[in-house]
Length: 315
Image: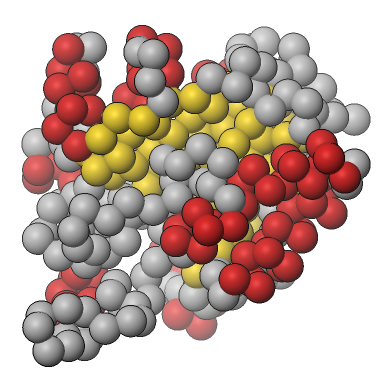
């Protein structure tokens, strides 16, 4: 079995090869490889799984192709609201932030919440004040602006179905672009697990909507006794199904293997609820699972003694 390893995702959804240019596909694959390599180097040098998942996620937060950090989508008001979480499988300590603006690397702020406060989740202005007190330099609005994300917002607004009274109808308020999230799960040489997840949320979201990424047990979970999990997809369903924890619970209480538990969490529980998306997971023995029920999921793995692998489509 591998001594250590890391798995990552960069979002899941209607990712179709016929709609992908060779240049864009190359960009995504390189982005995944950059993230994997950054996390793997930490593990290879004997570093912690916490450091590895934080770094792997930071690399994707800095890449405007992914819906996190610099590439975050816009809310209906034209702002970037970001969420992130991190969890230590050794101690079950966790930290998370939700609805933050102008934070270059939300995953690092989540780790500060875990290590510097008695809390798990900070939101909005309070989280931003905490970031300032911790010396995190804010990033200006224009750092997060990309034409691609702005056009996605305009397209989503154009497709809205407004009911009498001004409320949105049931359906896809973002035009179907619900599944952009980045995340990582890792096992280090010391046998410890960690997971981290970061997202720009749902394009064209309203009313301070928060998805599953910063919710411990829904979008992020790690426990040295079982596994580390990061999810991506339609967050409301991951919250209802507590999908990340469900993988761990199936392993701990029913003795299922990681692959069996992860497949059940996505293809039985999530799909049964009507949700779409996927997850990446690694267990305490170095087994990995990357199931999803969408046409594609940006994903990758890098295990000790092996070579990095990336994939995008349902292949």
